[in-house]
Length: 100
Image (cartoon, rainbow, N blue to C red):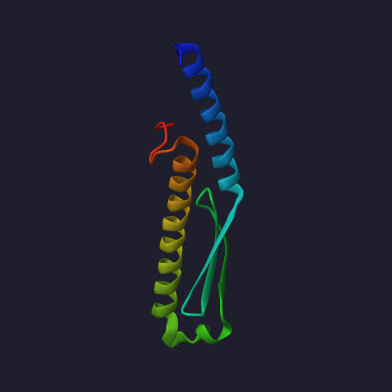
């Protein structure tokens, strides 16, 4: 493969990677913790919704609910990072992609 073909291939992979990452940014990731807290986050790490079961609204449950929200958000961040790594690996054939 000559240098021009390599550049064309690299540009093609870069376009595919950008398209896949754009789609990821718009994808919803949802997790539920303890059956009482559900969080939806977009692939761009923006929280869309937080839903708390009515039964969790007891004042005595405040710290537990706060912890569940934190756990849910952290879990979603990990899911999104993993999805991004999977995209890069599937398109480029290796983890980390081209480093774009």
